[in-house]
Length: 345
Image: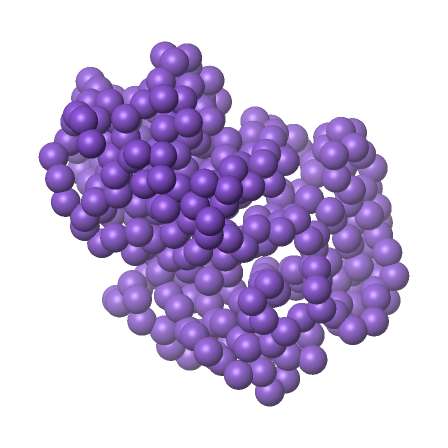
């Protein structure tokens, strides 16, 4: 390709999404990652695109809402260009309600969701359905219609292929050209902190397991006591994840992965006996602010940061791609203040 206008360092979900958005604005883009596409946390197996609770509203929650609502169109465009399904589906989510206090809280959140989600999705209390539903002491569950699923690695592959189809380059090595976007995950947060002489974030390891189990078509994902159970369209169910701040081997799985399976079977007994076809571990980038870190690299002209997706990177990706493309291609700064690099300093 001709000299790039934009170089993206990192072929995870933020890097690939930003590159794709810039390409659709007419920029010449190259993505460079020595590890290849989805080599870090973005190559995971869970793929839960779940909203924050509809209460205590703030810019982060508002941004996530807009991003989740934009996701269907975003991924439809990527799939149309690449011919590869990212596994996206807005199939909703069920959460058990254990007691009267939890029921009252769920009903109150349903009221606020009507206002905050502006009728674009619902959060409501329903009787627990038969079959694909979590055990619930009260016999009722929370149903939300905003949550979606995606297959993380396939989504990255779809984005990579779409970028190439549109004339961009996805490389394992190369020289920077044009503006440089650093979307380099947890290692990038550490490098940025070293360059700025202060910590800006770290990595949190997560483990997950993938089961061979064909859930009913369009089955919702389940969220039970911090555990995500996500049925994918390919006849698998992902279960995750742990949160480990201390770890020796970023890619190793251990007894904590087995514990995830035990918890999943307790929440959803029909998973008993399902074959484990993969155990996965990776490290997710967590900024000090707990929000995505977006915008110019302080004191380094022509360099930008797109990092800190942590557990919500795939859900935030369409919005992150949009505001970074606004900044890089149009010179328009629409990055929320809470997401600016300075917010994590």
